[in-house]
Length: 442
Image (cartoon, rainbow, N blue to C red; front, side):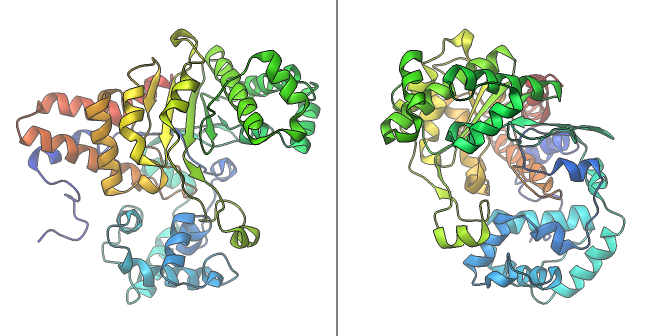
């Protein structure tokens, strides 16, 4: 029997262990996350492990609800101690869930604790972790995990003065214009006031968007991001888009989709012009439990996998730009039933690749499925590798989780005589570090 979360966790062959040795200590470039840049600037400390783990982690909140924990102990006013104990009590029920892996990897890597977390061990682990936390801050964690680059997620209206270089970590903004694309009138007014452009016109809106993108670039922005349910099916000309924009308060569902598609293409053109990578996250339905959304707000654990975005719609979007006009584009789907079709699409359009297994797919089998699909239908060696997509500063254990699974996938092929060990080691290093560093021009 293997040791509990021992050194060979998820590594099931000698070749996998050899490959892992090549990548386990590589620095980290976290090119998509939801970390708070002000906490990095201020080198924030944490009062206890309950705050560190449960202050904003909707993965854990969702798991606690699944196991019957009351909301008072999740997002309510209960103490961090009581919330931590409640979480500890449900951890044994999470077998196979990535939280079970991440929880114990973080305990071992951050706190030096290698016993299972459960109801019996909760108080003991709580006390031991808190003692360790006295000497741990945000900068401690970033240094431990060798985090070279952090791309936070930022709205075009955001003040980016907290971004910059802190120790060995460059903190850069990500241009995330989801609110702009929602065409909320109050938001458009604020955007116009900030940029001095007339956002009542389509051309004014696009000029305002470019001004904010230029500001983001000055603050070190290298990457953009979009989150939506599905791609538009039909695309319109500029003149038609102008007409739709003038009537934006009374558009039909189809017309809203057409205007959204037009704006997404125009933003892609801006990203190409300003040398910014474009990330597209789709096939998600947000805030499906209306009552709990009203109580807890967004990003609280009430988002779900949506139907796959029709591949014809993805093709329609990519077809709006010639290969030489398209920015580097990364596709992330929450519905991984469409992975084979999307992987095929990356071979039909230049500058398009599949991203990491996203959100609900960030599991042992989800990552394996993502890796094998990209390998079989696309080119695994060009992949950008892992990101945290997280709000927790201890979540960098997820990079180790990914590196172990990638090493195991490649090692299995080497063991069967289907892949060269030297090539596997180099590919692993490229996927885990070199590819994204080169793409971001770090």
